[in-house]
Image (cartoon, rainbow, N blue to C red; front, side, top):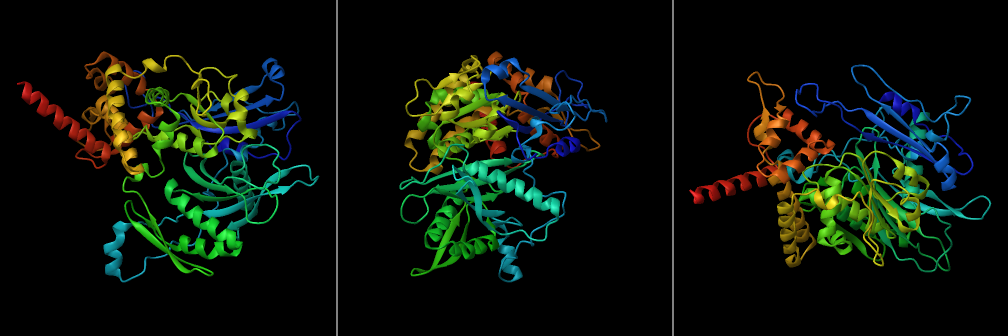
Length: 557
């Protein structure tokens, strides 16, 4: 892993007529403690894929356009296929722009830390009574940046540049500054991903969207971006405000961006005091509110209330957009591909649509978590990510469609209003992946969303429909995690687990699902838990379902 990250450095220039990128996807190996077929290990290697796509597609088909570099730390042995070097042995184009891709680090190695989170006000007794209201030690955000479009040196076009940053990080070593610059450069890329020649505008509709920065270790940070036309007279290019945070809560940060925009229209100087107050505020627990006092000239002191939804695992999601773009049956096809960790590309022109759909699809997998590459908006310069052999969820703007459809074995979903067909490309078996009976039950449950009057109610109806699917297919997992009397981690008996399923179609699906990384990592966490009742909405639904089955069985007798 360390060797792989050391290889990923940004080089200053690209060769003519080529683009390059590098990204990583965590992979799994075989469980060393399992004697069953197809078992997995806890240890994961790092698969790194690099490619160069020539400008001419015909030429790239004839040339060697991509190479695979795979390393696995299996019993202290490393097998690697060297790639990305020129004839002189120097790092070639395959390593370039990697800082914009897989070097989104949080300076874990450098020992650099922000100041400690502020203590909650009030006496110790009050602190104790309010502990459940806050998520301890978490900032709302890491930093806010304003990204503006500035003319290039030759004056022929515009390029995104950071014109404001809060807070500034001082006192860093040289290599820390270099890492910081790489991250900030990547942010500008995601704020203006189109890669088109911008021109001054007199009208531009504001839009809010989000993106994800994936760390080399698989952890993620969220970017919340609001793009709009700044105040002024005459034609001018748009600008973007972007907040980077480890917290996933789209609705909350959308409101924060609205407040930032309001202050920016008065003066850039008005942003600082508001963001400083926000940075000092404790992050609220689910269902609770934090109040921020902020002064605005001519308006006086305002109190801004920021509330987290009670269902915190749905706070980054709005399923309404998903069902506005796709029918219920089409959503099920996408879910089927996602649950088996396939390559899926979503096509739309609106950045907000792409980001909301990607997060909604990932949320359908709860209580499991998508473990692979996920980019809600792919910048044009990184479009070659579609050539990756590993699973991904990608959002691509429609003007780049031709650069996507030359790939095979993936699902390409058109979200546009004027689409001719929803599925531009597919593997072909998506409709047969889910068990027919359970698929019908999901469709029936989704029908109840028509009665939902709020976003929260809609989200709850949709999420529970898919949550019950997992309850019915794999909800008996805990009975097949065996613990020894001496303590220590449990062992999952996979073969006995899926053989306990009566339905042949369900058993077939589960055997496929057991091969996914999302299930493997889920069951690894379960193995580490001590026997006994467990908390969480998934475990609650499992108990409710099991109780219901017992009552139905008792009635029959």
